[in-house]
Amino acid sequence: MKKISIVVPCYNEEENVEALATAIKETFRKDLEDYRYEIIFIDNDSRDRTREIIRRLCQEDRDIKGIFNAKNFGQFNSPYHGMLQSTGDCTILMAADFQDPVEMISRFVLEWEYGYKIVIGIKTSSKENKLMYWLRGCYYKLVKKLSDVEQIEQFTGFGLYDAAFIQVLRDLDDPTPFLRGIVAELGFRRKEIPYEQPLRRAGKTSNNLYRLYDAAMLSITSYTKAGLRLATVIGCICSGCSILVAMAYLIMKLLYWDRFPAGMAPVLIGMCFLGSVQIFFIGIVGEYILSINQRVMHRPLVVEEERLNFDRPSGPKKKADRGPKGGQPSAQGAVGRYPGGQGPTAGPDGQDPADGRPEGADRPKRRRRRKKPDSPQKEAAQAMDVREQERG
Image (cartoon, rainbow, N blue to C red; front, top):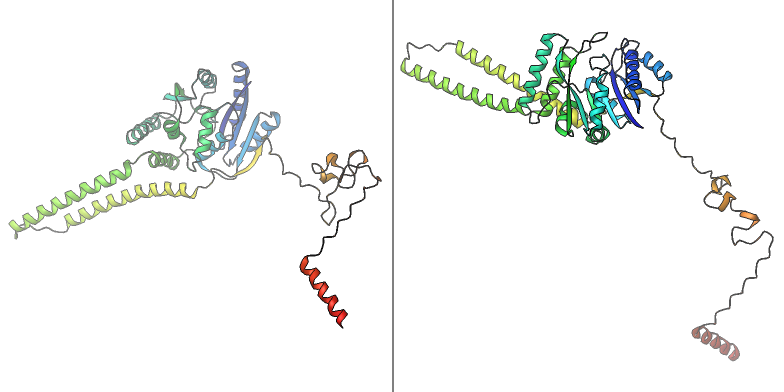
């Protein structure tokens, strides 16, 4: 039976976590009876009762697992890390606020069984604020035009990913992952399923202007060169315009020396304009440097504080009993060295392990070694000593 992993990142979702777990299990009971499920809630340091509820869910169902981060590691690292911990034949990433419809799970699995390694949901409309939806659309279009890699519009990461693609993510080892760009750049053949994004079921979104800006800059610095190229182009254009204006002022001053006062206004306007352009592009360059710095430091995606219902790794191997001091192994530690684990004093069936004889049996007498004859030099020396003694 195939197993499907559901990864749900959480942050202050006490009103949605239990309802989502119930809805997922109901979907498997009705539409996916032939599959096993694994629900992984990864909590990004929530300040409400989210962790308490996840603990209770894990106690009630061993197929529900929990990961508690030591602190908030951002909206990209935490879901990505949760996907890497999944063990199913495929992994589905979805939000905890019900803005990713649970009903899409069965449709994702159906397309996966047809052979697609990646099945993603594409928003065609949304019940959220119209202005925000329009701004998001403008952002997706901008990144798509600036990027060297074809980006996916209205894609939030909600989708199904085969275990083969999860292994690609593990091998990638990216400390600042941007899943939407990775799917577009390194993903397998994919199926896109349109859907309408509903409103949050309960609670308040944790996204704010800074988080949205951070997401935009991560995508731009990871998949576009446009910022740096634009700085170069605009720098050249401003330099050319400055040279033309300077030459025009010089000619006008030479032709109308007394009637053409230059004044300080053009100088101040030019300085403010060029200064603002420089500051803007220094900020762009700084974003690229920040992205490079984060990748060079190569810090872990998250630091886990606790895990629930995950299989514990086997403990360290026990060292062989070395017996009493003096280096003699005990009978227990001799397994594999002496047959049957009997130790060095006795073998199986009371035999001596040294030569296989029963205990108490007489040992055969050892042959005496023959004395080697003396060398000719030594015999001659002994003969000379004897002659000297006889003369004396």
